[in-house]
Amino acid sequence: MLTHLVTPLLMCIGMGLAYLGAFANPAPHHLPVAVVGQGRSAQLLAQSINDKAGGDLEVRTIADRATAIEQLRHQDIFGAYVLPGQATGQGTTGGTKAVPELVVATAGSDTSASVVQKIFTPVAAQQGAPLKVTDVAPTAEDDPTGQGIFFLLVAISIGSYASVAVIGGAGAVLPIRLRGMLAIGTSFVVGVIGALFAGPVFHLVDHGLWGLWGMAWLYSAGILLIGTGLHTFLKRWTTLGVMALFVMLNFTSSGGIFRPEMQNGFFAALHAFWNGAGFVEGTRSHVYFDGYGLAGHVWTLVLWLVVGVLTVGAAALAEKRRRAAEAAVAAGAAAVAAAAV
Image (tube, rainbow, N blue to C red; front, top):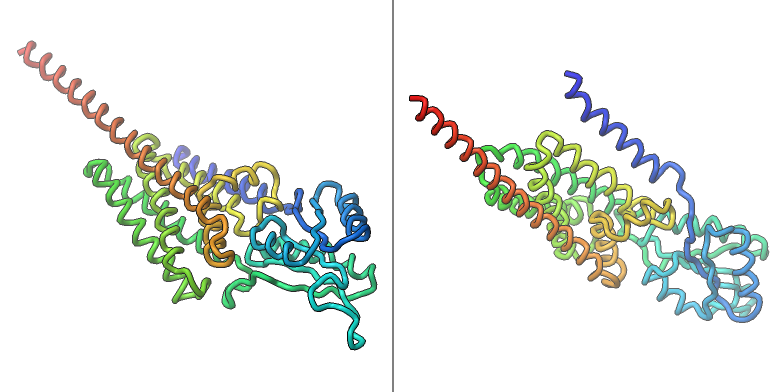
């Protein structure tokens, strides 16, 4: 009885450490932002903000607004503070006073955009002007925070790793090749369900649904193949293993709630190559940022799929050797019995 309680207790500890470690105290760590303007005033303002931030921000100066928008769409920066009179069309013509402008891209991360706005609102107040906020990459109308993609990731992940238990449980009667085929087929269905949720059901995205389905299939197939292969080695610990890989470390490093610039170094490092980050950032790139950086995120998902194929291959070799060893033991026992007779 006590041994059966070990798994849920370990899950409780792991989930607490992962989620609280990743989400409990979000704070910017070298968050890149920009001051847009020419001349000494822009440089002094950027230096002043950098000094006050103490390493929380990386403030750079950019000469013009168009360049700042391009860097926002490439997610090189997460906010650009445009000094009064620097934005195209601003001026004092007709008695309208130029005001500072903050340019953000909420599709990249709504939480990062909110943090940047909190940083620059008092800066504008010190200049005696209201802050104008412009969003150059807004999210879909039915996903105002942009976090719907993260919860889509959660749904696809649960559908994938829960199926691992069913496929793995059939290991006693099904050969590993057939289990691998079942994993691929299941991932196809999970990807379709994810695309339906994202499009017709909840309208999380308003275009690019086929591309989203392709990434959902790659993501799900990687989880299912890795889980199916691990079941040969982990047996009843497989559920704990896949939860550690694809929930505890995966959701927390995906960037769906907080980008890596808002997390500690451990989860920020995982974001660079973990499969959940590949799906979330790939979907953002595909839907909101004209495919910029999409190839790298797709390759991340492909590499996890390759790891899944290799894991299934290793499981096939292990099961073949296990059968050979069992056959040898049975043959030896038969020989001993025959000799005794």
